[in-house]
Image (cartoon, rainbow, N blue to C red; front, side, top):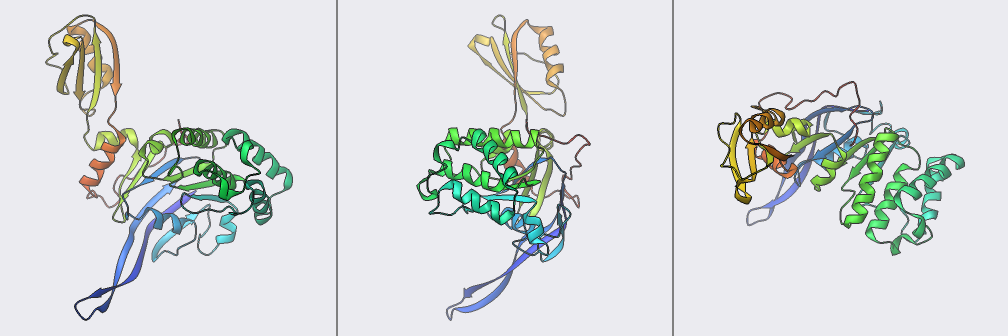
Amino acid sequence: MIEATELSRSFRVTRKSGRRLRRIREEVVAVRSVSFTVEAGEAVGYIGPNGAGKSTTIKMLTGILVPTSGRVRVCGLDPSRQRIDLARRIGVVFGQRSQLWWDLPLAESFQLLRHIYRTPPSDHAERLEECTELLGLKGFLTTPVRQLSLGQRMRGEVTAALLHAPELLVLDEPTIGLDLESKQRLREFLAELNTRRRTTLVLTTHALDDIERLCRRMLVIDRGRVLADGPLERLRVEVGLERTLVVDLERPTAPLRGLAGVVEVRTETDGRRQRLSFQADRTTAAALITAVARQAPIHDVSVVEPEIDDVVRRLYARGPTTAEHPGRFDAPNDVLRAP
């Protein structure tokens, strides 16, 4: 679906320098030799801090910007040279940009888009009915866009991007400013879209809980370079963060000792509950539960994974690896789908 090879983009900027306010032209590299692929049906989170190069990459993928160097293909097309053909096969949602007509009712914006994309009326009606039901649009289809709440407008934006049945949906900060209910409704819809329709999703956002709930794969970028690319579970192990096994014992017990891979033991409720932090590359939760059961009778257990925020912060601190293509991840034959 997407193939980027040594993709780079730089800009020339002018700044003032010295007392005489001389103008100096400089070259700023926004994206530097980025390479990755996205298979059909995947859901990929593309994340990084402000200024990392996320939006610049998205603009090159959608044909808005031309790469300075490198090669990119989306749906088998060159985005900048075949923008019209590509527009018929992808949908794009920018959280702070609108593709709806401000003074028109939402339903009329959808009708205009049907003519722009030349979608057959029957196909358009079927897709609109599905989006209306799943995203809860029925109550405000006749409301002018300018009178919609932010959550209502974003649901309209997603619908507008899907009415021509795109193979790829690119979302840039789609949940920005949404309340909890609107976020949850949108997440559920996107997960259903990816799972049932196998629409490929590329999601860029600072809301890392969106990534965790929708994407099985993360592509992390910083300062224009790819830092890591792979499943969240693998990245947790790579950065060395500990998992925590929470053990509820049947009776008060002294802190458990001598357990392989455990780096810290914390006790609560007179020793009935113990939190065992362990390194995933040295042991597994199953092996640790077996070892605990040898020392004390267990009432209940649970495993707490490292927060995704901690994983990403550790990746930023680590910086690029020495590998030419850090963290390259090859998708398996079974397409990764949102949970």
